[in-house]
Amino acid sequence: ATVYDLIIGRSRADEAVIPTEYENLYIVPSSINLVGAELELVDEEKREFRLRDALQVVKDDYDYVIVDCPPSLGLITINALTASDAIIVPVLCEYYSLEGLSQLTMTIKQIKRLYNPSLELLGVLINMFDGRLNLSVQVLEEIKKYFSDKLFKTPIPRNIKISEAPSYGMPITEYDRHSKGSAAYAAVAREVMDRCGY
Image 1 (cartoon, rainbow, N blue to C red):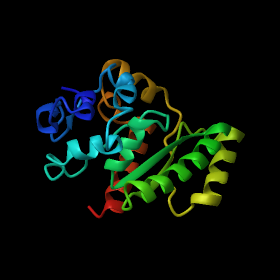
Image 2: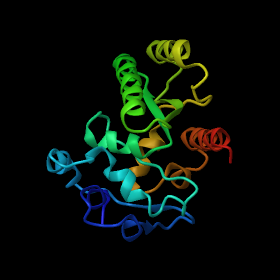
Image 3: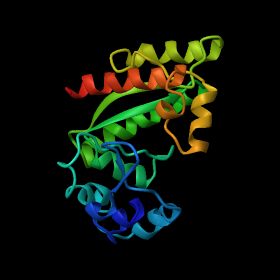
Image 4: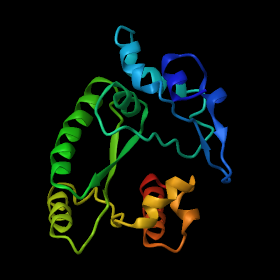
């Protein structure tokens, strides 16, 4: 079973969760079928609540449930935001990311008003940061102006090891635990736990 099966109501979350080779890490895999889910759900009632309802059966079984969203604000992402307590917004160090962040902020307000009043912005995570590039520094400074209290202290650096790790099917913390990218993700994980009260 996959996330697609959960959203269309074909499977229960407790049937879809599978263990990984890493202790205490479980996943519900995705599927290419998820691309068509938005069309399948267009006439369904409560379509924005499908993922939230599906996760109810397992929400108390895990310390964290992380939903990795597509970089769009369609129905699948709305489902994820409706199901979530908090959101982490990754921002690439590119000019157009600032526009996307502005749009996402408005979407979060709408989601809170319409579907999930308890949704909170846990933090903004700078991704692919390169302090040698003026653009990276400028994007970081712009984000600090508007989200200084929500900005994670550690940006994720532009790092070849982070790019290589998925092709080996490994998280960066296993692929090269001594890389700058691995250290940055570990620091962000600690900060997430602190912000969540763990």
